[in-house]
Amino acid sequence: MMPQSPNPKTPKHPPCPPMTLGNMREHVIALIKRHDIYANWVGRPDRAQAVHEFEEIWIAPIYSEISYATALHEIGHILGRYQTRTYLKIA
Ligand SMILES: [Zn+2]
Image 1 (cartoon, protein in one colour):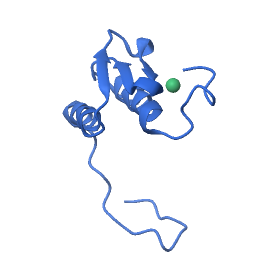
Image 2 (cartoon, protein in one colour):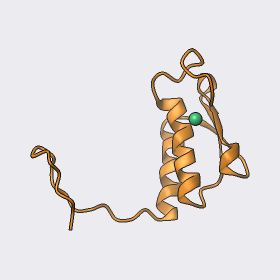
Image 3 (cartoon, helix red, strand yellow):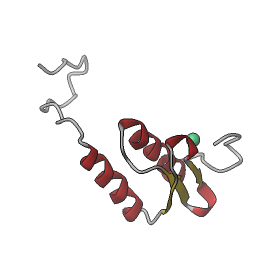
Image 4 (tube, helix red, strand yellow):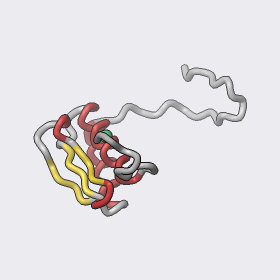
């Protein structure tokens, strides 16, 4: 049973199916390709980083929800607003 939204304008739709590792990998690769991001691979998610100015990320292969979330986080540094060094003091 889907939780009821308190907002009556929220459209009702069936719950999304769970993401598989394959879905997560495809999503990350699709974002990288669509936005022409330079992607490099690192061994572990805690080595991930992004350089907004060069549209370049370092991410770990997607083997878990953690590496998926980390990859999305780094992609967000490229695509998101307020990501220049003027706004960011830490990665
Ligand atoms: Zn970050």
